[in-house]
Length: 129
Image (cartoon, rainbow, N blue to C red; front, side, top):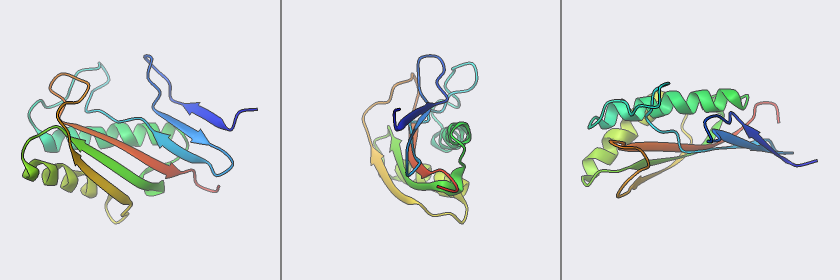
Protein backbone atom coordinates (compact mmCIF):
# COMPACT_ATOMS: atom_id res chain seq x y z
CA UNK A 1 0.00 0.00 0.00
CA UNK A 2 1.38 3.40 -0.98
CA UNK A 3 1.98 6.07 1.64
CA UNK A 4 1.11 8.77 -0.93
CA UNK A 5 -2.49 9.79 -1.64
CA UNK A 6 -3.26 12.03 -4.62
CA UNK A 7 -6.10 14.50 -3.91
CA UNK A 8 -8.36 16.59 -6.14
CA UNK A 9 -7.08 15.48 -9.52
CA UNK A 10 -8.94 17.17 -12.37
CA UNK A 11 -8.16 18.28 -15.88
CA UNK A 12 -4.80 16.52 -15.79
CA UNK A 13 -3.60 18.47 -12.75
CA UNK A 14 -3.36 17.28 -9.16
CA UNK A 15 -4.29 19.90 -6.56
CA UNK A 16 -2.49 18.19 -3.65
CA UNK A 17 -0.92 15.01 -2.31
CA UNK A 18 -0.97 13.62 1.23
CA UNK A 19 1.87 11.60 2.75
CA UNK A 20 1.19 9.13 5.57
CA UNK A 21 1.69 8.45 8.43
CA UNK A 22 2.26 12.12 9.24
CA UNK A 23 -0.50 13.18 6.85
CA UNK A 24 1.47 15.99 5.28
CA UNK A 25 -0.36 17.69 2.42
CA UNK A 26 1.71 19.18 -0.41
CA UNK A 27 -0.33 21.38 -2.72
CA UNK A 28 0.39 22.12 -6.32
CA UNK A 29 0.74 25.77 -7.19
CA UNK A 30 -2.67 27.44 -6.92
CA UNK A 31 -3.09 29.74 -9.91
CA UNK A 32 -5.46 32.70 -10.27
CA UNK A 33 -7.88 30.86 -12.54
CA UNK A 34 -11.64 30.63 -12.33
CA UNK A 35 -13.87 27.56 -12.75
CA UNK A 36 -13.72 27.99 -16.54
CA UNK A 37 -9.90 27.99 -16.55
CA UNK A 38 -9.60 31.69 -17.34
CA UNK A 39 -7.00 33.86 -15.62
CA UNK A 40 -8.71 36.23 -13.19
CA UNK A 41 -7.89 39.95 -13.07
CA UNK A 42 -5.00 40.30 -15.56
CA UNK A 43 -2.58 42.96 -14.32
CA UNK A 44 -3.98 42.99 -10.75
CA UNK A 45 -1.58 41.34 -8.29
CA UNK A 46 -3.92 41.74 -5.31
CA UNK A 47 -6.98 40.18 -6.94
CA UNK A 48 -4.89 37.37 -8.40
CA UNK A 49 -3.39 36.62 -4.97
CA UNK A 50 -6.88 36.43 -3.45
CA UNK A 51 -8.04 34.09 -6.26
CA UNK A 52 -4.98 31.90 -5.69
CA UNK A 53 -5.85 31.72 -2.00
CA UNK A 54 -9.45 30.74 -2.82
CA UNK A 55 -8.14 27.97 -5.07
CA UNK A 56 -5.63 26.93 -2.40
CA UNK A 57 -8.46 26.76 0.13
CA UNK A 58 -10.36 24.44 -2.25
CA UNK A 59 -7.32 22.20 -2.76
CA UNK A 60 -6.81 21.94 0.99
CA UNK A 61 -10.50 21.11 1.52
CA UNK A 62 -10.17 18.27 -1.03
CA UNK A 63 -7.40 16.89 1.20
CA UNK A 64 -9.36 17.35 4.47
CA UNK A 65 -7.63 20.52 5.68
CA UNK A 66 -7.96 24.30 5.65
CA UNK A 67 -5.75 27.38 5.78
CA UNK A 68 -5.19 27.04 9.54
CA UNK A 69 -3.46 23.69 8.86
CA UNK A 70 -0.83 25.26 6.58
CA UNK A 71 2.69 25.13 8.01
CA UNK A 72 4.58 26.54 4.98
CA UNK A 73 3.49 28.75 2.11
CA UNK A 74 5.43 29.80 -0.99
CA UNK A 75 4.25 32.76 -3.06
CA UNK A 76 5.56 33.33 -6.58
CA UNK A 77 5.07 36.74 -8.20
CA UNK A 78 5.91 37.41 -11.87
CA UNK A 79 6.60 41.12 -11.59
CA UNK A 80 9.75 43.19 -11.81
CA UNK A 81 9.04 45.53 -8.91
CA UNK A 82 9.73 44.42 -5.35
CA UNK A 83 6.71 46.46 -4.27
CA UNK A 84 4.46 44.08 -6.26
CA UNK A 85 5.82 41.18 -4.24
CA UNK A 86 4.83 42.99 -1.06
CA UNK A 87 1.33 43.63 -2.46
CA UNK A 88 0.90 39.89 -3.11
CA UNK A 89 2.27 39.01 0.34
CA UNK A 90 -0.15 41.43 2.00
CA UNK A 91 -3.10 39.77 0.24
CA UNK A 92 -1.89 36.32 1.29
CA UNK A 93 -1.39 37.27 4.93
CA UNK A 94 -4.84 38.88 4.93
CA UNK A 95 -6.33 35.54 3.84
CA UNK A 96 -4.44 33.69 6.58
CA UNK A 97 -5.67 36.22 9.16
CA UNK A 98 -4.16 35.40 12.58
CA UNK A 99 -2.59 32.14 11.35
CA UNK A 100 1.05 32.79 10.43
CA UNK A 101 2.71 29.85 8.63
CA UNK A 102 6.36 29.97 7.62
CA UNK A 103 6.58 31.62 4.23
CA UNK A 104 8.74 32.32 1.23
CA UNK A 105 8.12 35.14 -1.26
CA UNK A 106 9.79 34.92 -4.66
CA UNK A 107 9.94 37.11 -7.74
CA UNK A 108 9.99 35.03 -10.92
CA UNK A 109 10.15 35.79 -14.62
CA UNK A 110 7.05 34.00 -15.89
CA UNK A 111 4.28 31.68 -14.69
CA UNK A 112 2.23 29.02 -16.52
CA UNK A 113 -0.94 30.83 -17.62
CA UNK A 114 -1.35 33.84 -19.88
CA UNK A 115 -1.58 37.04 -17.80
CA UNK A 116 -0.74 35.12 -14.59
CA UNK A 117 1.17 37.18 -12.02
CA UNK A 118 0.78 35.09 -8.83
CA UNK A 119 0.98 31.43 -7.83
CA UNK A 120 0.83 29.99 -4.32
CA UNK A 121 1.74 26.55 -2.99
CA UNK A 122 1.58 25.22 0.54
CA UNK A 123 2.47 22.38 2.87
CA UNK A 124 -0.16 21.56 5.48
CA UNK A 125 -0.78 18.92 8.14
CA UNK A 126 -4.11 17.11 8.04
CA UNK A 127 -5.99 17.78 11.30
CA UNK A 128 -5.85 14.99 13.87
CA UNK A 129 -2.73 13.35 12.47
